[in-house]
Image 1: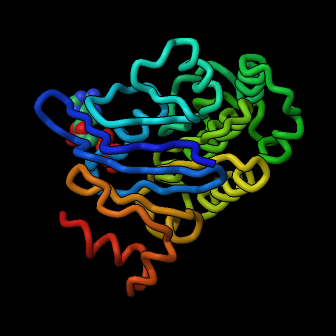
Image 2: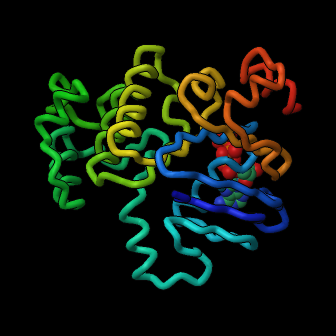
Length: 239
Ligand SMILES: Nc1ncnc2c1ncn2[C@@H]1O[C@H](COP(=O)(O)OP(=O)(O)OP(=O)(O)O)[C@@H](O)[C@H]1O
């Protein structure tokens, strides 16, 4: 089942055209990595499909709805099915972890058991700490737990593991892949870590010079003769 379909997507900031024609598709249950150099337009692309940024031309269909001219009530309906984890945020600085989880459980009217979630995410030692005082890795893990409270059909992650140590990266990825396996949810993320693309993503989209230079499975890329996705990236993208 097609979850997201994007055709010839274009977006400029003033005179600076960032996206010059992106074609993209996500099927239910896929994990898709979006890669490209700093400033390539990855976050812009994610913000458009998470419905918080306008675009200039092209077609964007999310959960069967064309975003162009969509009615507000339908947009709100789509947004309920999308959860987003942006880069570590200080938004919640005055709340403790347990308070945050309770707050968002109430907000999403979630029937998820918070105590089980705290166990699953190994948050027992941290649940009474203020969010602002957690390390970057635990902030990301709490943000991910909050995102899961809405039981989203689509999970969008902007550089979820940037700055995390290898264990924290592993823990975060195990939650993401479990969510994907257990709920059949679709995950779309950006990362600069090519090993993560190779290990965890079904497909990869490379944005280069405003276009999707490639949209393929990781197996297909390696079958082209590259030793790794890292080698592929260095070969395809100039500084
Ligand atoms: N609100 C904005 N107004 C003007 N220019 C913007 C705005 N947001 C992004 N840009 C520019 O658009 C380009 C793409 O930015 P974007 O953040 O989408 O890239 P990115 O691929 O996510 O980069 P990075 O890997 O560094 O996070 C950059 O040149 C950026 O400066």
